[in-house]
Length: 347
Image: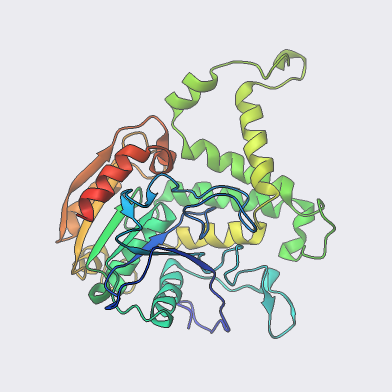
C-alpha cells in the first residue's frame, strides 16, 4: 500500500548478499545505496554489473563492514532499474512497461518494501542499517518506522527532510529529461537502441554532478583548462565541459530515465516528520544507537543538516565530520574516513 494511496503489486526485489547468516539470524546488516547505485555494493564487474561495487573498499573480509562477521544484504531500491520493480518493469494490467503509469513513491514506501524483504529472508531485526545520501534517507526512515528492528543505524550525508535547494536541483534535472523529445512522455521503451532519452539524461546528470562535487575541488581539478587541443574560443570545450559530457553520456546509456525521475522525486518527498507530528517528534521514535556523519564540503547536504539530526535524535552520539574536498561524493571516495566511522559504530 503506497503512502500516497493505491496499491503496487506484485513487487520483485533484486538484492545481493555477502557473508553467512548465523544460526540465530542476529548478524544481518542492511546496506542502502544512493540515487544511481544498485545492489552491487561490493565485488568485481560481471553479468548485470558493468562497474565494481560502489563501496568496494568498505565491505569485505576484515574491512569496516566485515563479511566474516556480518551477513550483509544490499537491495536494489523500489523504483530502481537493476532488477527491482520500477518504471521499466512490466505492468501486470497491460503486460507492457509501466512507463508514465508508474505511481508516485516515497522513501517510506521504499523502506516498507525493504522491510518485507527482511521478513521474506527471516530477518526480524537487523544488526545495523547503513546508508549514505538517498541510502541515508532510507536508513533514517528505517530507524523511525521500525525502531524495534534497528538497534544501530549509520546515517551519512543526508538530512531529516529535503531542502528547497535539493528540490530545485532535482526538479531541474527532471525537467531536462522530460524536455528531451525522445522521452515521449515517459513511454519510450519501444525505441531502438540509442534512440531513448539519453540526451536529457546526460544533461540531468551534468546538473547533478556539479552539485555532488565542491567548487574548490572542480577548480583545482579543471580550472580553466581546455579539453586536449580544443580551443573554447573556436567552439571547443573547457575540460570541465568534457568531464560533464563524459559522465552524462555514461549514465545516460546505462540508467533508466524514468527511474532517475522517480527516485529524484522520492528524495524530494523525503520528510520523516510527515504525518508524525513534525521532525522532532518523529526522531524521538528512534530507539537504537545512531551514528551521523557529514562531509565538510557537501553543498547538497551541508553539515547543518546532520547537526540537526544529532541534536534531535536521542540516541545519536556526536556529529562525525569527514574532511574532504570531494563534496557530497565524499561518502563514496573517502574510504578510509568512512570506514573508520562505520567500524567504530559497529564495534
